[in-house]
Image (tube, rainbow, N blue to C red; front, side, top):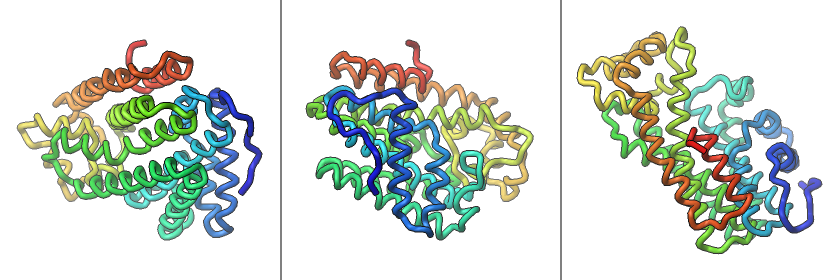
Length: 324
């Protein structure tokens, strides 16, 4: 599973494109070792990467210290492997047909292969973490356990039209935040950062992950094609922050009735969006995210001033729409 990774110690190149290419190279080397059965299942997501946001967090956090470049790229591969595994499993649970502009793995290769491919990615991430040392191994194992628990909470709360904002945040803190937190923690470990900095970065990652998910829920409704039937998440009873915020103040129960209707899949998204907007669901959810922005940035108060810290602040501001 070897691949050409930079060996020299010292500050790594945190140019997003350059670091992302190094992480992708490592991911390809790892996925090539899976065998002919699983390689096509995993390689689709490896070759069609997203923003590589989580591995970029690894790089920026590592740059706060004196990282070894090879280990930092491998840490970036760990979080991206976990993201791939989560997407493979999520698409099966959510019955999503498209992922990154191509057929989802369970559509192309079958649900069993997609699930087993996800398990293989979790295993590969565990092996990478073990080779980086006991601290990385423990952190990765804890994050995987949290992700599994968060996914279960997400499934258990299906069709819960009375779910409170607090319960929703508990789900997000289990399902989305752990991978953001792990990215920051692994980066800090690779950089040799002191314990207080590691704790601050873990808190930064947690708050960033929560706010990111809330805003992503808002974007799902703001950019949806309202001429289409409701999406798979709604059909499965998985309601995002704007819908839950609207449900909490909707006294006429029209939205709840629509979401619980046995014919929901035939309803146009325009009806859902109109009701959510009528009850200020998107605006309220955005305020909920805004409450997290100061906590996200304040978590970096104990992190020494440096280009790496500036990069983390800029990344958070860009993702969350916070003022510069």
